[in-house]
Figure (cartoon, one colour):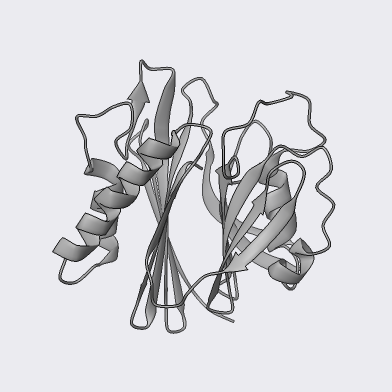
Length: 236
């Protein structure tokens, strides 16, 4: 939920997400296909809320959640619905971006969503008061880090690590970007890509989706159990 990268390269899009959470969070359910509003959607499920942080539908639309908006907020602790359920509500719609423009987010905790819809990339942001979205450039690469866990200075440092990775990698592949998410600044357990903050907050899993031509791949690694999941399906 807390680090997301997007690689747009030739005819391929690779979206990868590190989920940083309290280590006491119950183990998530491995990704599988569910039906949301008559549409097939693949996602790992949060055992606590029933929501998700990484969703991929049968049309190759992807919505990925980060906690928080532009800056760290003070949580009220009692919200109407979990952000993971909001994510599923959005991806379950025929047009997630159109639904975003009408959805009521009153009493929902701040969040950011990275949305790929019809090969167009969007950033959706709710700060608890205002809702906004922006369309991002095609064929460019992006990284986000959650403001709830990483200061502005650390987020900028992580952007620099990502830029250096891109500049030094002649051919960016799904395997190489997965390695970036697993091993970058491995000695820095506070702010490296895979964190372990005194066993209280940890990177629990890494989810990756690759969209290429008429094919969707979803890879999932549970970092506690060391289990991995892979599924390939064709775009409708």
